[in-house]
Length: 534
Image 1 (cartoon, rainbow, N blue to C red):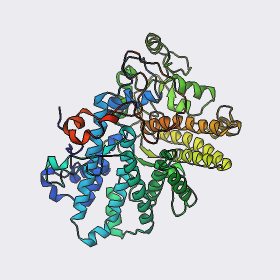
Image 2 (cartoon, rainbow, N blue to C red; image 1 turned 45 degrees about the horizontal axis):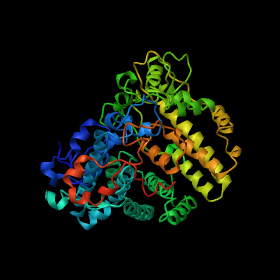
Image 3 (cartoon, helix red, strand yellow; image 1 turned 135 degrees about the vertical axis):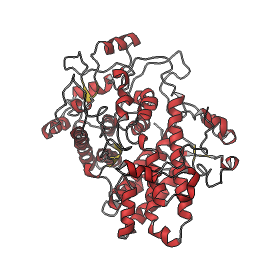
Image 4 (tube, rainbow, N blue to C red; image 1 turned 90 degrees about the vertical axis):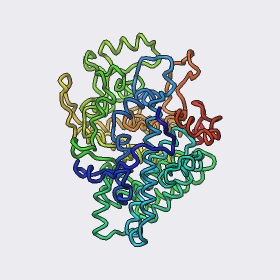
């Protein structure tokens, strides 16, 4: 077993990022020659280290999401087995290790930056500001999975000159981490509005930044959209409710000064330009479609397919494809059926799967971080909660149209090959989108209560996120308890229903025992996060 806790991190100096493979090699910093690294290399190393947890990588989808969140969200259907509601240790460990490898990259960036002159620090402040935004995005994901995590003292092995004992990190509460992040992001939003770069440093930043390509405007939008996402997540928690309402109002009421992602051209994502570099989505195929689907990573759930069928969802044929023997009928696996019935349905070839042209076989599939449909659904919920039905309706309907266009755009860049038993789907049309929004099961005006309207918003989040933004999907399903998902009760296991958080990985328990003791009593699959109050 690897002796790894939150302070001992593999791949400490993986640094690479550019669209040319040779430049990845040039940017790799040998850990034995750490003094040779630079601010630019360390900055790129942060993004590079977790790229396969942004792009659809094999490990993330096959090892982690296939048997955990995608099932808890009913974004996929699968034959029920006892033990399904206990997250597998390998998948949990993969996420934990990758996060702390990424955090170690950031800590090294802090160390390198601190060693530079005041003039160089001033000229390169943009690297520190935007690296923190990116780190906080990932940190929110991990906090929302586990709750308390080592954070403020974590990743300090290099800074502590390899002293393992001094590098054991305490667990910070999720509330305190959210507070730190929200405070810092608010300050960063202000700093980005006043920052300027000379031409030389602009080029350096553009080369190192493979997310926003050096665009300060896009980093502003990322920062404020991330603030909205975090504030929305904690908006029902007693200690954050007032802050969430106030700051969301400030952002949405002043998008000229505090710009956000408003259209699909402004989506925050890692784009793939050349699949023969390290920035590619080649792992998606085996991640969800290994064994031709026999691992149930891409098989549709009945709940999702039924909703899309009933409402003539224009995304249906773009996101899914019918089973080979289904005669064009889209059907999903019923989570309440017996395992034998579920398996027989799949083996008969009548279960829909995620569309291979759009998703699994599309090596140009982007690494999705924050997108316009997601932001507009957050806006819709905010306006609904604050009594502005007209703005809520506009944001809700805009989000639906943007979601459809988002998947249209991904389909348009597909390079899927080797699919001989299906045809590439036609993109959805504006007429189909208009008809869908006006339909009975989607129409805003036909919902007569705030609860019904919130259910519409929650359902659109669930449909839009599906398996593509699985972590966001699970957080929102838990927070809102919508849409209502039914599961078999696993009476043969102590965990009878899907969990509401993950257990800490065994290595953290074993190798950071003193600090783990402070969270041992809350390390339960049934322990809700502080924002999960419904």
